[in-house]
Amino acid sequence: MRDSYYTLRQDVLASVSMMPNTSDGSWLITGVEVGRRGRGQGRAREVLELCLADADTEGVVLWLSCDPQEHTVDFERLKQWYEGYGFVFTGDDGVTMKREPQ
Image (cartoon, rainbow, N blue to C red; front, side, top):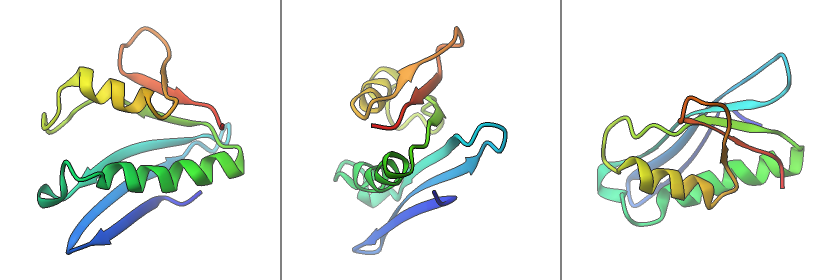
């Protein structure tokens, strides 16, 4: 795993930022970002899939907080997007999601 994944196409950067959990070997996705001009073009999907491929190959559990911080997408849509990649809610906080290697 790496602490960041990115793609750059047509001067639009898409990135996934991560940090390791040294106690159990899992990783926390701290951000998925796409430049404003690249939104709605599959750029987030493209860069997230790079990250997920490594996690699956390496057998790494991923965590994230399903929180549309910039409010560019509503919570329900973001939740469904992450669920489409195998993330499921854990706990009672309503935002923490986990993905087992696939």
